[in-house]
Image (cartoon, rainbow, N blue to C red; front, side, top):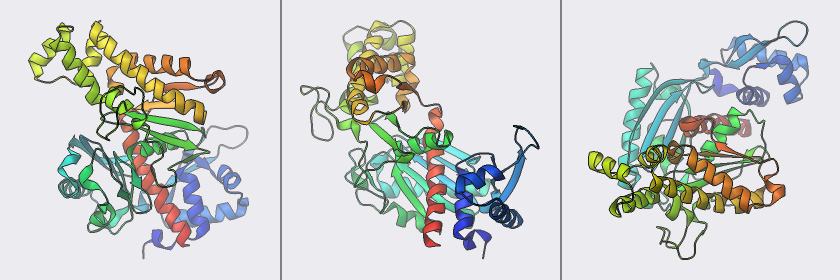
Length: 400
């Protein structure tokens, strides 16, 4: 039996506290857990002895002797993090404190269906584990993000607009054929919110993470926890209507912000601008590449292309129109924006901010900060690792 398999309730709580507070000292852990100093020291000594914790150096002194800090040991095993997007697959093997041991990213199409995509995922994971000298037995837990609504308890997608072939498919059962470790699945933007929550070490309690890529979604952190709603569909803001006369969305309704301001809409509008002769810069790019990407629109904007500027300002304005309603309702302290469209540059963010501040109540925006997510492209992967470790520890605590 491995030491990880025989943790007490208090030992599990200690590991959780260390995971969520990087570089913790014994005194800080004692205060956080409301344990006596002697109990905390005894638990730490036991976990150090079996190789589940390790000392990570000295903190700066605030008076007196500098305290020794602690972190989760690689002896716990490894985590598997998977960030599956509508058009991409990002996979990593991580240490318990989310250090990257091996990582691979490639294009993917979720419309190919779960068996095709997940078979490729299993093959990649075998390669990555072998690359860092690990096997499936070393895996503590698997965290996987998907671009659709998830029933969190069953780890199944429910009528996902971008992934119709995945409805009710048991991702957990499929991956459990490869790993005996628990598998946890969540919406991709919830994982981005988890990643930011871990980065901030719980320093912010009420904030939003907006992902703008092929689709548009929102991760909600409320009182320091990711809020998923009654059935896991909280934050599905991409289908909020911003124009009753707008184009038909793939969900069947008209004027959804996703249909008007996500990446496919940006590309469609840019192509139309080329057809109308409004953008020589994008016309050149279309001739060179055969396609236009949102990043091309961002580059055109930075080169002073008027059509590209208009497209990004309109998209940002529509996202801001949707977001203003959410801000009025939820009153977050921060809004972090991530996803592929952030690569278009600062104009989109400026347009979002202008629209939110113009349309929201003064009290809601008095101290509101809106910015691109500091984790940038790593947000989903970090969140997948957080999900895996957090839920593995939580389930052990419940089992104990």
